[in-house]
Image (cartoon, rainbow, N blue to C red):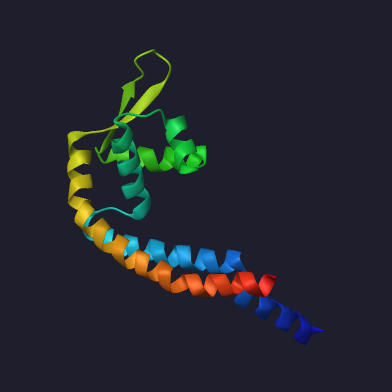
Length: 143
């Protein structure tokens, strides 16, 4: 019985797209974090800064939906950026809530991080390309 469970578990580990893609995601995240660390950022912070900068100023709820983040996750991470002086809260022009916007310092940090992000992006593209045949094999195994 235990051997049967072990063999089935080995098949899951070898063929599960969820297992494989999460493992790949952790590897890619670690790669970005290692490259961004000298600038004082991690991937989540970099993505938030870039997403806010891309909008100019954005409502937190809209940003959370665009990034598929839970409200508590967005709040925790955006508060960290506010506390670091990289993001500020502005009153919404129509009086409905607040907007997140980069400060001058936040813009500087984002610009300083771009070369490290570009290095990570190139390496991540290679890692994902290398992983695609394995992921495709998993799909074929499931058929």
